[in-house]
Image (cartoon, rainbow, N blue to C red; front, side, top):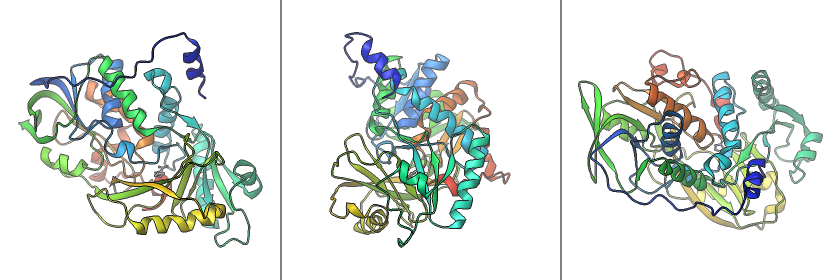
Length: 413
Ligand code: PYC
C-alpha cells in the first residue's frame, strides 16, 4: 500500500469526498475547451487548473466520464521502453502515478507489482538486453533475468525447458504497476471540478470553428461554444475529430480486446507479458486475471467482443500457466486503438493555431495518463510543448523523425 494512503488514513476522521461533479449548464464561452472526458482530457483539465491557474475550462464528452478507452484497457503502468524519448516520458508518468491517490485524495488502487516481458528465443533476449541497457542508462530499473531468477519472481510460471515455447529469460522491470482505470478518470474529474472546471457529459462535438487558420470554438449537440484554445484528447476517434478541424493524422484505428476471469485467490504478483505469444496478464485487487493479446488485424470502429479473440488468448495463457485450464472468463470487452506508424503518441500543436492534440495512443495510452495530462496542460497554457514531449510532435511524420517504439510499445499488432 502506498505510504501516502496510510498517512491519509491516519490523518483523522475526515469524510471522504467521493461525489461525482454535478452537471452544470453549458456556457457559451470558455477559455479552454477539452474534447474528451477520458483520463487524458480530465488530467489535462486538472493540471491546467492546479499548475497554471486556468480554471475557465470545459471538458466535453459525447458519452460519459471515462466511458471510452480509459476503462477499456488492461491498466498496465511501466516505463521499460526502447527509445530514450519514450523511456524518459513514461518514467515521469511512473513517478506521478506513485503519488496520485494522495494528490487526488482518491484511491485509484495503484499497486506496484513488477513487470516481466518473457523471452522465448535468442532474438527476444537480445531486444530485452537492449531495452535493459537503455532503461538503466536513463535511471529506470530494468534488468534481464534468467530462468532461476524468474522462478523466484514468479513461481506459478511454467518454466519447463521442454515446454512448447520454452522461456529463456525475461526483462524484469520492478516499477511495473497496475491501477483501477475508471477510478483514475473519477479521481481526476472530481479534483478538476473542485478547482472550477466544468465537465459536460453527453455533449458531442460536431464541428470545429476556425477563422484565418485559428480555432475560435466548437459546435456541440448542446450548442455552440466560443473559446480561445482547444485540446483534443479523444483516443479511438482521433482521426474523425481532427478531420472536423481540417487536418489528417497518420493513424489507423483498430480494436483491442481484453477480458477478465472469475476472481481467484491472489497467486500472481507481477504483470506477465509475452510479446512472442501475444499475451499479457495481471491479477487485479479483486482477484480477477486481467488479460489481453494483440490488436484485431483490421481497421474497425466497433467495440464488440469475439470468440476468436478468446480462443487465441486461451492457448498462450495455458502455455504459461497450464493449471488455469478450468478457470472461466467472466467479462470481455474492446477498446479502439489509434495506431501510429512508429508506435509512439502524437502530442502538441497542429496545423490549426491554438488547437492542440493528444492522440496516437495505440495500446499504450493508460500508463501515460498523468504525464500526458501534465505536459499537455503546460503546452496549452504556454502555447509551446515542453522538451519532454517535443519529440512526439505531429510534424515528425513530415520531417522523418519517427521514434520507432515497436519493440516495446506493447504485445503485438
Ligand atoms: O503498453 O504495457 C502496455 C500494454 C499492455 C497491453 C496493452 N498495452
